Image (tube, rainbow, N blue to C red; front, side, top):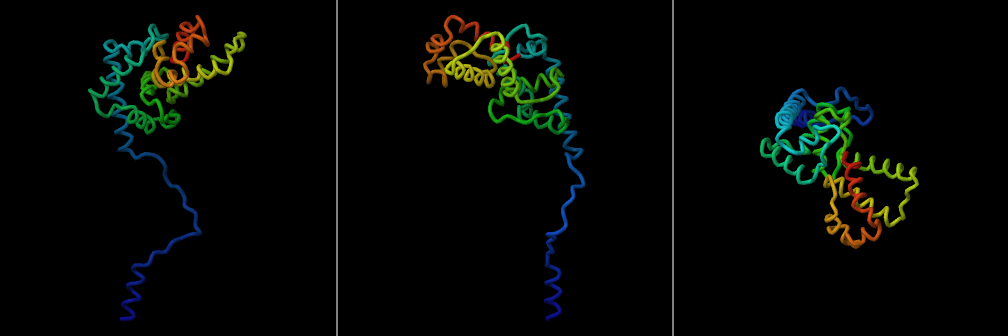
Length: 218
């Protein structure tokens, strides 16, 4: 009985090595996952190429430079058509597929404004940009460059104006563009809305919004 108990104990013992360091022998996605991701992206690419003349958002994204400003309504139309055609063509699934097939060209993933990331996905698919990065990151980069250009031209903004400009940047980063009536919505209405914006920027407000739309969403 004692011998039997010893044998049973040995069979069920688990030795844990706390000394030897683990060594990674392979890193990456398996072949099946890569093939599935590649097929998803191929079907997506084929669709936007075949329907570029039918969908306004694609017409604009195909034109370089853009002949017309892309709006939230246009992009939502594109998003709906994509979802209706293929349930897996979501921003998250497409982004993950690129991360599998081209990991070296995918930069991060934004938690906010994923809807706007559809712009980045289409541009990357069309090879209009070398790296797939969150749309908000591109907007922030262009906004910083715009501020520097303004400073070089001798144009400065007081702190309250800068606060509003940053709110406008955040709106464009999530909604693609901004219109004067958007300044009556949150969070602008909490700061005085369109009336306050006119007070801060005067008659230059419409021109300023058009300029930011053109520069930040380019």
